[in-house]
Image (cartoon, rainbow, N blue to C red):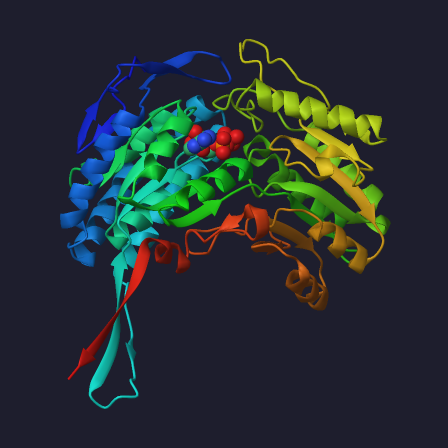
Length: 482
Ligand code: ADP
């Protein structure tokens, strides 16, 4: 991969930033520079807004069948380029190749799903009290969409937003994370090569997130913000979207509880916890951050978890057998160190890991050992603050009411996990958990066909599922006197 510095897409043309500025993109495992991206600013955003606004006039009037056909072709191209996309994902972001392949497939699922949903956009007729009146509703695209995406799922978060936008008849401006712009370029090429007309999707790569974000949000032409990222930035962007009253959907942080009830199989639950906690090296908003295990199963659960975690191999994602990649940057490692030392000081036991590690032959400095902390208490930082890294924090509990209260005692409300073989417990507890998604004996309650999203400080709106396209549609009421 050479220097790639024309990563801004305006009106169907790849070009450098107006200022000519670029920034390097590195492989977090090897510290190697993979390429360069254009460092766009507010001027580039203005160009993108003009392009998207102009394209909206024609794209919004295409048929659902034309839009579906583009998405279906983009999906086919993604499948053809699957391996190269996965390898680039691993190089740029660090996740193991197997996980990268899974993510690329998941990204494709959104193209396929919303190709179908485009054809199901429909309104209703409503009876009127007046004999000479009829009502009907139309579902119409909201307009120009600003999409801001994170680095942790750098391809699926793009298709999860752009596929429904395109399906609905919207046009869009994407600002991908500065850590992963090269994969964003390859992702947009899928749409362009599938025949998406110029200007329907535009992209401004940049490391000046605030400047680009402000230019997008201040514009009255931009009618919707869709964002995935941290809660702090998400809340700020929602505020900035208020003066022009944009539609907003935001997928933010999480602090998932993972609860193992006394009737569960502790080994099965521990295997599930080891899988979901260390997925993407813990850098997922649905990663379990607090694992509550009934005291009667506590030792058995910890024994299996520790054994599993000891077997995890840290390294570069393309190496055979690696399941733990690097963290995204030094700040992330510093956070692991802070949470572990705080937990240690307050009495937690470190069963495995607990330190930064170096990997032979790799220059990357952001590897952190997969870690299990036992006897974690609510006073510890890790019980409150999102970890976003490979640390499993385990706590015993005695009573159902107590554990539900503790599980809900967080500003976040994205995912929760429950392990029980008792149907009544499963339903009773699920109903009381204040989270947008609950996995019952299931570590992966996600699919393009299912609504993803949170409550409280974890976000607004849903992505995927039937609901996913609603975020890009307005309802127009038509009253007809006959
Ligand atoms: P993380 O800490 O996981 O990187 P962020 O919320 O900082 O999460 O980033 C998610 C996305 O939001 C990225 O594309 C990032 O560039 C963007 N972003 C960060 N700060 C701002 C901002 N002030 N305005 C607009 N976008 C921003």
